[in-house]
Image (cartoon, rainbow, N blue to C red; front, side, top):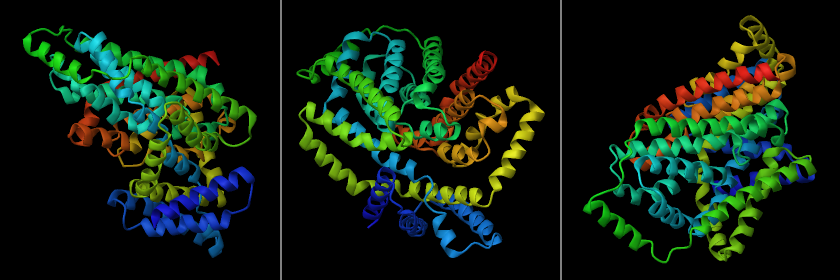
Length: 458
């Protein structure tokens, strides 16, 4: 039943946004039903955090003597993000159906000679795919590269792969339009997506270059030698005979550019929010790509299968995000956000804007260790972060918030990135998180200097 309720609420939400129909009470009622229905089926940590949001929100409404109708209407915020979370995986279908993973393996066989080069290739592929596939990047990169590991002398292969994939995966999340975090921060700071690219793209590139530099220093540049490795290479090469030519990988690059251009044009042409624009474009674009590679039937089959399975995978997200949205709506309705904003402004005046901006990225990072998703943390912070009242450039604030979210994705043991990677490499999420700590600390230091530079320039 959940898949139909989830599908209905997403459809009605998009319909109301596109045609400006007033369906708020019906949508809010469905959201309230979803929260109550999923409360006892989600993970205990998710249930605890969500229940805290619900309890505090109900207390605030009760103290304000609100009617039952106001309780119901408080549900619904953050439904835009849930819509985006639901449709983004569909964008990865053409990548899987096109057999691009085999093209990646072919490149490795022909171009990569050392473990250092393999790390850079793995991290780069993860960066590349992350622009389009979101979390599906992790398993696709791992299973594309893993057969080639036997060609190289690598100690602790799982740590090697985990670091390369997660570091590369995280950096495009600073700017990629399919990233819900980007949509949240744009909503907070009021900037346009195209206008933040000159500020976040350099930081994204610095992050991936930092990863490669650190990896090059730590890796042993041992060229593949010996009968055993030659045999492994022959076997792997034989298994790849007849695969699509390497130029197929270039298709993804073209698709990424085209998708970003379409989004940029749509953002300029329409008044819809950035998150809604991306959510609406995903399925038509993925279908069009599948038609071009003659995989439309397989795409429609995968879409049908996804519809039948996504509700089970997303019930935790629906519960925590709708609960947090309820709390946020109550905070706005009771004007508590104005009080918080005054307190934050006062704190900024005490420590100074430079220190304040440096501390901001640490907040999502800290809350990530409590199990709170960076998207939820940033949305909650949004009520206290008005760039105009704080006297801070919205572009610098955007960079600071996004950098904090990225660090949370890298080391937060409870988030989906670390959780999925830990299941792939069959290690605990805390161990995978610990592997990323040295890089994350180095990256945050670069972020701090970068913010200082922006503060001086803008």
